[in-house]
Each structure stands twice: as structure tokens, then as C-alpha cells.
Image (cartoon, rainbow, N blue to C red; front, side, top):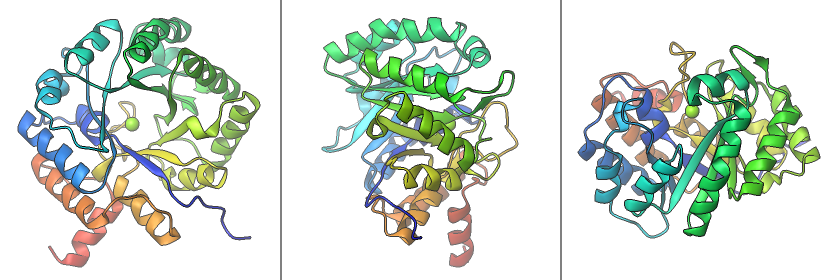
Length: 305
Ligand code: MG
């Protein structure tokens, strides 16, 4: 039976936020602006640019205001910013941000460690933030992390993920990004999660997946989700960004690995692979390390550079 595949997928590029916040080296604002320009030049239309969390907790992104104010808007390109609460939303609005993301955890322990609140308190707390953002005309994305498992709590029940997704959509989120934050999931768990989403009346058209490649399963998981109708995926150029619980492992699914697979399958992404790989090589130099993406390494080797 031929693989079922979509004609096109949407890729949300998360390297400038999810990626850079995990790096030891903080890029100066000028280089972050260059990274955003390069990603847009490569064809990205949704780029997670920064975060309005406390600069104390994420010093790598302490320049959020400066970055967003200096960023030149581009027709057709959405630059999103992470917002943790009402204060973060105020900061984002003051910079003229049009697209925000809120982040919650599907597991209890990670919510308490990452957000200092219980899972249900965190979700409920986002209600007024999302409403205010929607009233201001913003597009809102809702992240749910640890949707497959959590290092302390073990497997996350799929029905819980469906229920939390439903709540975030009911609050007004335009899209839910489901994160396998520690990258332990396989296509089996992805399929089970999709079945739970369908049972929970969560429209797959509003669901994106955010896979980590810790156990080398990210592309297999993308394929499983695609074959069941998911058409939006988060990815990070160079594969930067990791789970704080698996620092030694590969981080986010690398955008160039995803684009390479889609090219081979005839699935449109809108991304220019050569420009993307050139950006990964450039970023690796600026960060002073080899980045984990397979395709960028392979293409560098084939170029002999
Ligand atoms: Mg991530």
C-alpha cells in the first residue's frame, strides 16, 4: 500500500527561540536578526523569534524587546513570541507582536518544575491571557509539552493530552503544538495519541507536532502523524534546542532533515534546502559547535568543505 501523504505541510521554525535558549553561547541581537532574515529568505513563513519569559530564567533571550522592535516586518512571514503570563503579553503587545504562543505541560511534574504551578492551575491561568490576546487580534498558539511521557511521571495518558488540547482550543488558541519534549515517542504512541485526539474532538487541522530526536524517532513520528492527516510540524534549523533532561542527545527535529524527507516524498514545504543548509552551517560557526542535523552534515561532507 502506498504511503498516505499530504500535498504540503507547514513548518514552524523554532530555532531562534526553542533552539537558542538551550545554547551555552548567547548570540548578540544583530546575529539573531540575521538568523531571522536568513530563515525568512529560505522560505519560512512562521518563525518563533523569541520569548517574553523572565530574562533571569532565560538570559539567552533577554533582548526580546530590542529584537522585536528592530525586526523588519515581511509580508507573509509570522514572527511569534512565547508569552508566559499577562505580564509577558503586555511586553509583547508593547513591541507590536502579532503572534504569540503560550506553553503548558501535559504532565504534572514538569508543570511544577518548569512553570511552578500545577498542570491545571497553569492551564486555567492561560484562559484570561489567551482571551486578552484574541481580543487584541493576535494569533495564539498553545504548546503542550511532555505529551508522550515525562521523566518523573512516566507515560502521559493520551486522553489527558486530548482534554488539555480541547481546553486550550476552547480558550481561543488557533493551534496546539504537541511536544514530545524528551523525544521518547515512537509511531505507536503517536498513533494512539491521534486516536485520543479524534475521540476528544480535537480537530487535527489545528494540531501540530513538535518532535525531539533524542532516540532517533523524530522523522518516523512525523511520517506516522502525516499518514493520519497532520500537516503542521515544528522543526529547528541545525537541530538545535534540546530537552533539559537529555542534554547529551539530539535536540529538536532538524528542519533540514524534515525538508529532505519531504522533498523525496514530493511534499511541498516552501523551503529552499540549500539556503536552509547554508544557514545551519553559518549558525554552527556562530555558536561554535557542530550542530546535530544529519542533512547539514551530509551536505557539508559532499561539498568537501
Ligand atoms: Mg523543543
